[in-house]
Image (cartoon, rainbow, N blue to C red; front, side):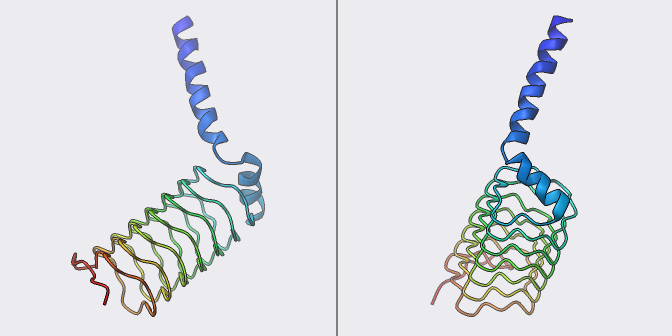
Length: 175
């Protein structure tokens, strides 16, 4: 009996710590209103949520886990998504202008027609991502991984691509 109580107590402390990583009031605000401008959602666990059309302008999503979520047509301008897990997230038609997605995991993400102009995707994982029609103008894509990514129709004017792994696996050589 004492052993099971100790395990339950330990588990509740572990789960409580995971929930408390992000500001719970701001997480609830996002879920209730679909808007959380300049919120602290760092380390938040929002797996497989439907957040289409949300406004997260300037939010801190560093280290957050949103894999499998839907953020189609969302406004994510100037977010800090450093090291965020955004694998398999749908960002169709989303506005990610000026977003910091350094070392973010965007494996298999759907970024069709997304605006990533001026975004920092340095060392980001975009393997298998769908970037068809995406705006990557002036983006920092240095050392990003685009292996097997779909990039037809993506615009890359002024993008920094040195050391990026291209869809065919080759390394991009900046000219």
